[in-house]
Structure formats: structure tokens, C-alpha cells
Image (cartoon, rainbow, N blue to C red; front, top):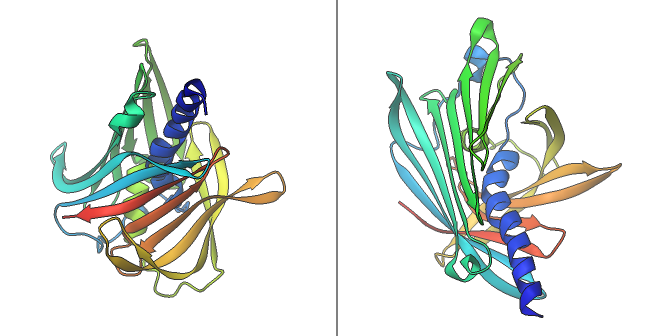
Amino acid sequence: MKIEELKYYMMILTRMTCRRMLLLTFFILHSSFFIPANSQCEYQITAFDGAETINYNLYFNWQFIWIKAGTASLKTFPSEYKGQKSYTTSLVTSSSKKVDRYFMMRDTIMSIYTDKLTPLYYRKGAREGKRYYVDEMWYSYPNGKCQTTTRHIHNDGTKTVEKHLYQQCMTDMLHAFQQFRNIDTSDWQKGQTKNVSIAGGSEVVKAKLLYRNKKTVKGDDGKKYPCLVISYIEKDGKKDKEIVRFYVTDDSKHIPVRLDLFLRFGSAKAFFSSMK
């Protein structure tokens, strides 16, 4: 392969891999089901207690060659937001030094939510090559509804602000991930599906989660974990298209041990490496 081709594919796959694999994956994999807002947006936290850090290694494949694309670190800790007890979850994703030569990526996402898992604030700051942008979202709950105020700061410094009012609970990438971790899956049956509706600005994506089976999966820490195997599927015309297959621990914590992302060019994976 010519060096120009390698640079091109490294750029394309890195953008799709590191960002979509964990940032988009945590969003769509663990996305919320539409339910009435206000008190019904609350969940009991059972998957974590206090602070925790989960680390991942990211890889992508091109022409039968696996390349380490970068790392990701997911941190959760008790916090306070506008005088209210809360939790903060942050996800920092970085491309490897080898990939940096072709395309540098640094993503930082933060989500703040109450101790009942009601979302309050979301922020994403991303550097992709020479481009840098910031997305923010504030939540409020007037009259039992969910109102979001979003602000996008473009690379040139200009800002776009939008407000939306919903009848049901809304979520962001990391909040949705934590929400899923606290769902009881003990009664899930093989082949069971759950429809999901994902808000992405002005459009809503209709998709579904398919529970496949159970499988023992090895992480990058060398340990093996009993996992639930779940696919995220979208409609591609009249056909179903599997976007991501993920493996989460078959326990109350639901920690993702492995993520398989099916790309148009090659494939990508993320593996659990450590937790503290």
C-alpha cells in the first residue's frame, strides 16, 4: 500500500473508530428508551458506588492487519452541580502516537446527572486533525416535560444555539451508558429485542437492540469474563444492518469488555484493559 493511501485510510478509520466506537457506541448501544419525563426519568444506581475508572484499548483492521488506534478512559465520580448532589462521568479518547502522524484525535466527553440518574448537563470537546469544536447540552424539566438547550461552538469560533421540548426523557452519550448499566437484564431471553429511539438534533433514528446469547470474552488484561452479547441494529432501506456488537459483563455492573464495530472500510474493536 502506498503511503498516501495509508494516510487516507488511517484518517478515515481513526475518525470512525475511536470516536464512533466508544463515543457513538456508548450512545447508541446504551441509548434510552422513550418514557415520560420528570420523576420517571429517575433510576436507582446499583452498578457503581463512588468513584471508578475503566480503561480501553482501541484497534482497527485494514487488509488483515490489526493496528492499535488509541486508548480510552471512562471515569465516574461523585460531584456537585449548582448546589445539587450529582455524579460526573467523563470519557477521554486519544489516538496512538503512530496514528497521530496521520490524523490526531483527542475527544473529551462529560456528562453530569443526579444521584437518581436524571441528566443535567453534557459537554463534548473534540480535536480531530486541525479541527476543534465543542458541543454542550443543558437539561431542564418544566411542567413534567424535558427541555434541552444545545450549543455548538464551531472551529471558527461561531456558535449555534437550539432549544427543544420533549414529552419524554432524553439522554446523552455517557448518561445513556450509565443508564443501561443500571437496568436489570436477569430476565432477558435469547432473541429478545428492544426498540430504541435516538435523538440526534432535529432527527430521530429508529433502531433496536438484539440480545444474542452469552459468551466468555477475554479482555486486554488477560482475564476472561462471562458476557451478554448484544447487537445494535439500524434499518438500511428495508434490511436490518448490524452496526455494533458489544459484550457486557453478565452481572449487575454491565461493564463493556469488548466492542465490535462493522465499518464500510475494514472493522474495529475495543477491549477492556483495566478498572479501578
